[in-house]
Image 1 (cartoon, rainbow, N blue to C red):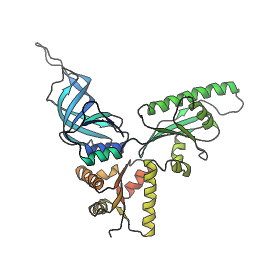
Image 2 (cartoon, one colour):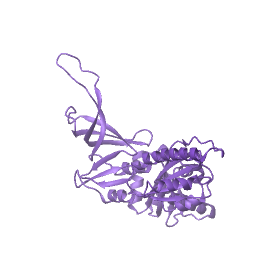
Image 3 (cartoon, rainbow, N blue to C red):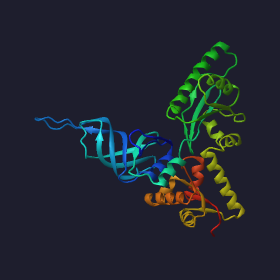
Image 4 (cartoon, rainbow, N blue to C red):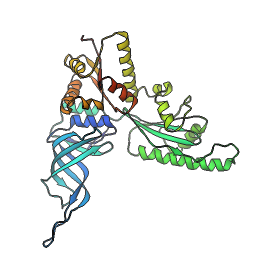
Length: 355
């Protein structure tokens, strides 16, 4: 999550959610009667004295909204907020009318509170800027780009070079095509990195030496750290999936949120098999651990909302934060998310056993 102080007021912050985990963080800190500034659209009807009002034209506007309702909108990939418009940048939009907005990943909002609670400030501070990782799986014929933010992995479609891979082609033609291929990949990289201002690491892998040639090409364009990994001999989207299970990439990402969660889940499985009771599985066991202040780390997948009321779940997360435990949310569509979902959607590692 990207968090910045806002020039709007001393009690406002500019926030951009970068993944689903960040949307849960926003859901935890936004409250009724907070105000929010965001870009949205609204239908504006033109009226004249001797004609019926038309259906209206939907235009983009920036509004200041006092929040009256907040909830996840069906699926958990967006937050639905309803409230009253206090101000807007369009004179045709009256003040005092009701309006609803959806907040999605990569949307920017300015959130203002009358008073920030300590727990809310802690939640934002703990979800501040992390290093983002760009995985690039490449060979002479194809490449794929994956953006790793928090515990979420976003994969762009394959980019193809048009190379046949045959050795008898002239080197001049191959080099010309490779340069064009590299430029296309660079466009793809910029399409995702332009949204993110924090520290970035580029990780290249794939069969052959194309990854090293591309690394040399990138050094002219990027100041970020570039790492070339050996031992992953698959390119394209398949190479991304293979890399996420590889020991070498896990070692490189061990300090990232996705690496930490993966390690915690491995530890949980070890505790289960060794008979050590310092873990909790499912809502009831986790809630009991929170109440006993034995919870050390909590991991949940967004599938938990199929089993637990949204408000009740948000209260559980905030209670967990209040006792000093670490909280990690994962996308149920990823490998680690599926592991958490298979264990009831929520698990915890404990400081001490309570059974």
